[in-house]
Image (cartoon, rainbow, N blue to C red; front, side, top):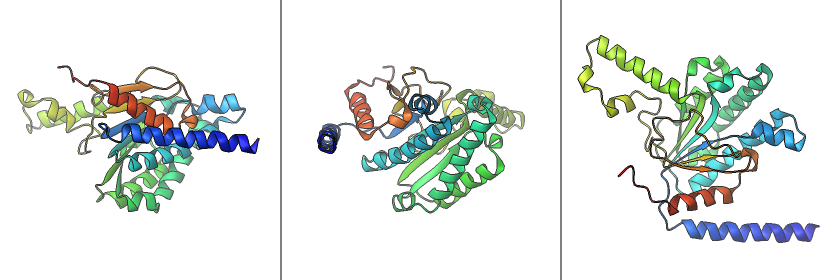
Length: 260
């Protein structure tokens, strides 16, 4: 059995190396956004409590950041918790928020963040996040605010429609106060009032969703207008480096015309 595992591991490593060689000379996405779906279903299928699925999912998210840095992908956005998810059972939400706080506190002193100068930004309706969790996230933002090599966006209490509503309210206030003319409202004005304002490459080149579901689920609705979408029939805790590489290869094989 051990020899068989070694053989399988060797084959996996060879395939991974082949994929890396396959994509390294192609156009690399500058911004990859991921919908981390399937933690609960993975745990249920394995006979675990759903909280364990979220824990393993968080581990995978950290690995994905490492892989993206290795591949020189500058911006990564992780869809961690949607506004709709806030309607879930309180026990599950408490565990999710506990994990978010734990990982944020760890990242404050994580050499992967500091050595690679990763700037972390939280996008979403912060007022809906528990105070202690929001405090941990904002501390992480603060200690990385001057970094500019890589950018990690963590979407918590995030909804694409909510983002557009909030941007619209900001613009309406500017018009009401006489700071902006209605005739001057254009795409740039709207973009400058989104949660992602100021983030380099704020429009994802590639959006990946796991779990077999093929929908965007209220994620980066404005920013994803011309994103390439890849849907994977695996649960998030099963996501491997070769899955990331395969989606990048798929991205490279597509003809991006941006409506032209």
